[in-house]
Image 1: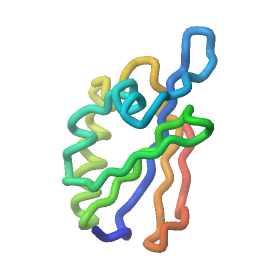
Image 2: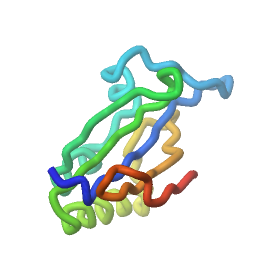
Image 3: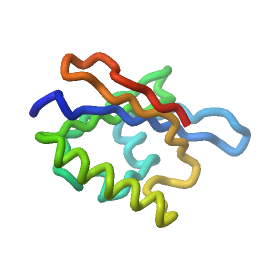
Image 4: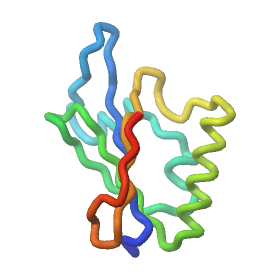
Length: 112
């Protein structure tokens, strides 16, 4: 799949005492984050997962075959947010997006 239409999304779990949860595995992180099926399937992304920050961050890399597929995905995910539809668990923080150049370097970053 082309790397021309790739970006990374970053998630972490904030506990009641404001500390960050340490994921026990990628599967644990995927279960806790509970990404909506729209996030996972719209635009047919190739998805890879990695734990970062001492296993307190789930980094989700999405790669699309075309700009149109990525735009379709972004529109669908934006609509979830616009409709106040939970697309991840309530104790999960979606805190950063990195849009990547074709060579994999960061083009731009949005922090929330």
